[in-house]
Length: 342
Ligand SMILES: Nc1ncnc2c1ncn2[C@@H]1O[C@H](COP(=O)(O)OS(=O)(=O)O)[C@@H](OP(=O)(O)O)[C@H]1O
Ligand SMILES: [Mg+2]
Ligand SMILES: [Mg+2]
Ligand SMILES: [Mg+2]
Image (cartoon, rainbow, N blue to C red; front, side):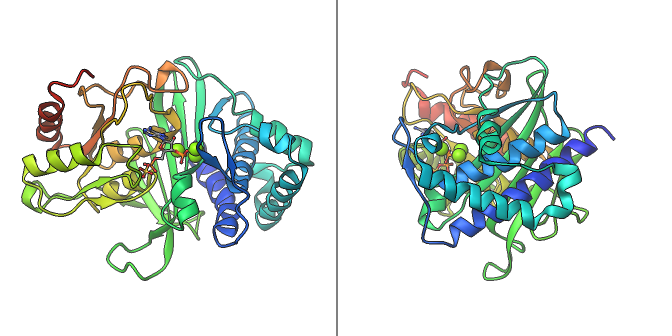
């Protein structure tokens, strides 16, 4: 089957990174830095990016990588650099039985170089991985949901996606139970899920919910009011006859949720006309939803065009829904946005 090895390496790489992110999640020391755009990045984002890029580079040395982070802050901050290097070494040690498949990082310089290998500009030619080492950094810092997200695009089209959601319950029907799930998909081969604690296990196929009655449907949205328009989303839900309150969740855990039947719709309506969605915020999650039986478009109803560079320049907002519901959801979105110049 095509992309079997890419899927396996992607799953193992994000699992390896999750050992590091979970350690930081459960520690008091997050080492937060504020980036130029005022958004936060932590020692966990940087360590996870290093681990994943070095694993991908080991397995697929010819491939390019678009990663969210870069090493500039670490190069200027020796204590933080030492913290990240210590964490990376611990995760490498914890996964040393995978060194032949995922490789190693010999020293802190090699770690910084791995982080910066994510500086590719993207585009529609060749094999390009898109990486969000921690999606939902604000959720991560709040002690809520976050995701580690990795996908492979070939000539601008997503072919492989993998998502680790360390804080989603393994069994959505038992929210107090074991947490941590690993989802993946290959285009045309379906989406699967397994506990994050067993990355070598065979994943179980997942599919979206079969609820087609809006009065029983649930929609997901982000937590941060600055990232999507809660008021417009509420008004769209109301016009569709959705009565359940929005399921608010940080990160691509929203895509993960609807792809395994917890919710039928994910709305992300832009709050600003100038913001361009980042490809790494959608590559993995959108493929997993599509492979689980959903449709993902922007608010115009256009497919997401991942071949435009590091951002989704030509798209605005996200409308993801169960295939049978998507046309009605899109219509309601467009009614709501009438009068706004998109
Ligand atoms: N203005 C604006 N509009 C839309 N999206 C934005 C905006 N600013 C930032 N971001 C990106 O939002 C990513 C986190 O998305 P979430 O779905 O977790 O948002 S939410 O916090 O749950 O609302 C977040 O990803 P991470 O940086 O990986 O956390 C950002 O890439
Ligand atoms: Mg960020
Ligand atoms: Mg993100
Ligand atoms: Mg991120």
